[in-house]
Length: 324
Ligand code: TYM
Image (cartoon, rainbow, N blue to C red; front, side, top):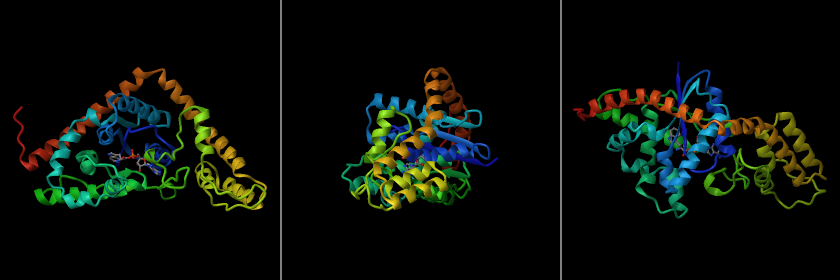
């Protein structure tokens, strides 16, 4: 069976960009691929969260994974920190990684351009990500478009390692991106992102979710006039609705006498219908944390079995001896 691997940082509450760009793919791939899906909690440290917040976010993301349909009978779910071979491999890989490769990373450049003072962890972030991936030799890495370059960097590092040590230790992975949801827009039309304050979450109070949807940015065309049908509301609505429903919404915009407020209410109703079963499942899981913790323990054991073998192979190739 082919293998799929991906991860999400528990650096805040997940949003529908994470769902449509990544988690929905993980769920849909479960029958066809052996799946490994983890929580990148070491990556989350790069934004210096408070310890308590990181712990809470970690629990929230595993609940989200399960509520949204990841099935522990089919996929291996685990915490990055429970497989210490990820960080060990990361150090080894950092020695075949040219500085220039990391200096060109968009996510690093974007963050520093926004005035974030980078720590070394933020700079070497793609090396840890390469190690997360290469340790499991996956065929595909399902992600949103913003992670494409990180998977390319992973391939570059793998090629450099294989060439340096004259062995095919690492298999070259491919990103898997679903084109129409590669970059889910936020409520302001820019890419939806935890750090831009433009998200719509999946879980939260009805009031909170409604507020986020009501915050979608629109122009000031008066109620009675026709409106541009390709607006931020339509873009988000099309994530949940059929093509016919999207066309019907567009026609209402074109006809006039249909306000943005009406459209937002329609979007909110669609959104609630779509996520209601997941919200219910999440409530149930919250009452059963022992079960959730057991899944993570089992997942870590299974992941570690693969990770230790790969890291043994790597140590041998680079000449790091093991005496105990
Ligand atoms: P993270 O935690 O920022 O995002 C998790 C996943 O959600 C996708 N995503 C989006 N997709 C479409 N539209 C959006 N607006 C949107 N926002 C986020 C991301 O592309 C990602 O797939 N570096 C990774 C975590 C990671 C990882 C890995 C991923 C660590 N190691 C190994 C794959 C393999 C990250 O920060 O994703």
